[in-house]
Length: 102
Image (cartoon, rainbow, N blue to C red; front, side, top):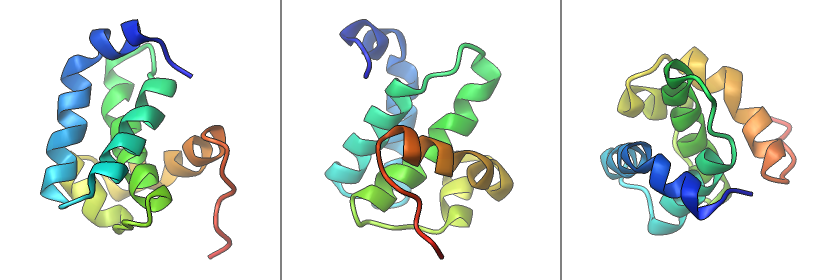
């Protein structure tokens, strides 16, 4: 779980999540879940934050039943599909969900 201070300190990243969610036409629930996942897993290094942001959006959409492809999330977040692929399962499990068996 995260603290209110985390939300304040990462305001620019939360705005970036909202921008990516708008590009993908995600629901408010998916956007809220993505924000929660990101704030719970904020990396210390700024260079890792964009990757976690993208994977968080993918997880938020997945959990909210508002699924988007890894490729479309990656494009909207300006990262590679591989970046999303490398991080989403760990974030999903950290959020307390089991990864699907596709």
